[in-house]
Length: 140
Image (cartoon, rainbow, N blue to C red):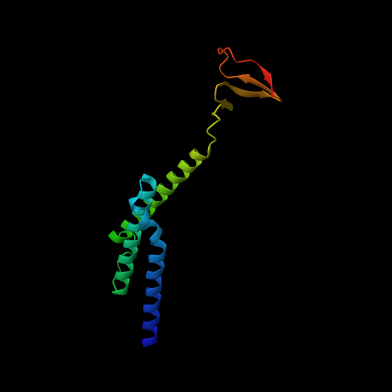
């Protein structure tokens, strides 16, 4: 019986250590100038604190957070949704930042001091801005 309590205490201690280890990178982002990183850090810290509250309640023999309508459970679920929304926003920002800066959505390539050109067919390009004097149909 006593051994079971010791095992449970060790499991709890290990879980808290894991939370601490996983939480450190996010705590350092709380002062970030990047709004997305800061929001993600705040949400992760809030979820961790909520999880610790859940663990504390369970250790005290309370049934908090197990039922869908329980306020602690609803709070944890809401935090998870926020984290998912932030992650989607971060991925969208990364995708937007990966688009090459020298190409536009119409397939035209921008070159400083030269008109924009768009590939028309195999080997030929047409000027996207035909009213410019430097625009001519050319072979690539």
